[in-house]
Image (cartoon, rainbow, N blue to C red; front, side, top):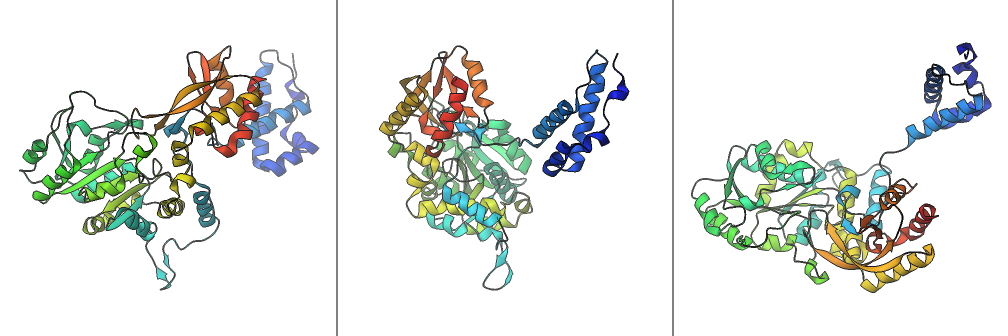
Length: 449
């Protein structure tokens, strides 16, 4: 039976030369904590006839604990899944210019709420506002921390305890259990659903508008389509009916498209600009979907309505921070300069030449020495353009256990996210950033070897 007195003390371990390196790297308190937990584990193991390890083994075990404690839970991954706006992988990757702007603003002080001309306190709401007005044609704009917050803020500021009319076909639930009816309830607005699940007519809106209402709300279908025997009136008609009854129209368009997706062979996604032209008084959309920027909720529209929204107490609770504002501004500049397709990764992936995709897949096959190039489809994802896909070429790997192979890819130092179809592992070049190719192949080779 082992003598517990033979277990080294924490003090004796701290006097070892290796411990000094641990203290320099991780700090004295955490090093002591690691030693204590390791020694406690040894005591427990002795109850089951375990052995007392030597000091070197105790040191190594403690170092392993420290390394695990210091591992960040949020790390970069390589997206080879073929889903461009992957909600679970952080949605839109940022342009280099956007990253640089965020770094510059975060590395020191900034004029977040300081007027450099007057030398007095300024308003953070002005940042990005002029660009949004210029790009969209709206009278005013506000950036908040995400689109759910944008919708909640608008309803809270403009429709608490008042009727808000929305089509039954738009009472959607998107990822994470976000439900439009729940958001409306939280805001204090009174939901008035019109039409049926699959068919809504302009007369349904007109009938509901015969009673006093604060708003008419339209919501993006996000991640589903209603097909078959279905009808929804044009936004122009909804706007006309709303305005005839002096009711403002709020449109949650979700994805924040500033470019026409139809030019890339996809279904047309309503753009910010055309929604303004159709007569919307307020528009809400995401910054990190088709806009291609950081997470944000953007509200644009009539100045008088935006003033009420900006003054609402909730506006402070959901306001954007300096990093978000810097990133959104840099992203919007790409659109203003007409370089969004070349600079913003989401649009670069959507517009990627099919021959370039095939060439990259072929290079991967050659570098790995295995696999087959096959036709496939990439998805836009992120609650944008539900059911829409783009033709692509995939590297298909025939492995003994696809699930286990994918798990090994996920556990690499830089995890790789892929997909399985028909017992084959599929890797899509469209969503792997060009600058990641060398690292991607290095990590993949380690799993294949």
